[in-house]
Length: 158
Image 1: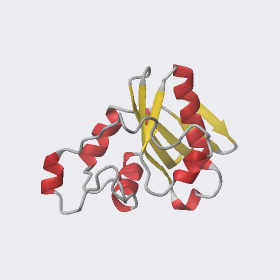
Image 2 (image 1 turned 180 degrees about the vertical axis):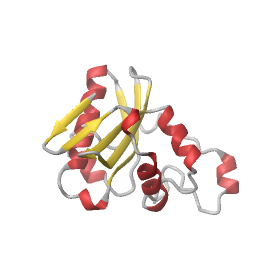
Image 3 (image 1 turned 90 degrees about the horizontal axis):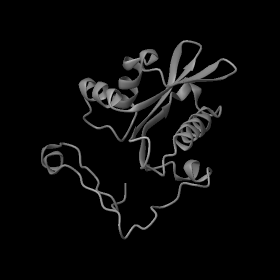
């Protein structure tokens, strides 16, 4: 699927993805991908619904969704390159993703963010976890023991 707006395009075509751009951003700029290797980046893309944002043919943004296309979706790895921020591309990307998931009939979409709560709350649907007394999470204990970086568990301040 392609969605066009002026000189920009959002596409779910994985063949258009520029893995070097994605991995460089996730490695050098993103706080949430500590220790992610290129192989890991490639594997996450392979097993996700991906959205690339392009200015003409240059990739300027990305997001991926881990989903079963019916019950659950997890929105992650969302970014717009710094030179393209402030022009509404992140909002357009998020709206496009939510529309695609809504059209598929996905019932529950979640995400994790340290610093963009306000952005996602603008959509009216994102809020603190519904029924937090029921939801739980798990971090692989091997990652906690072997990481040189401190992992933060849900509920801890980031």
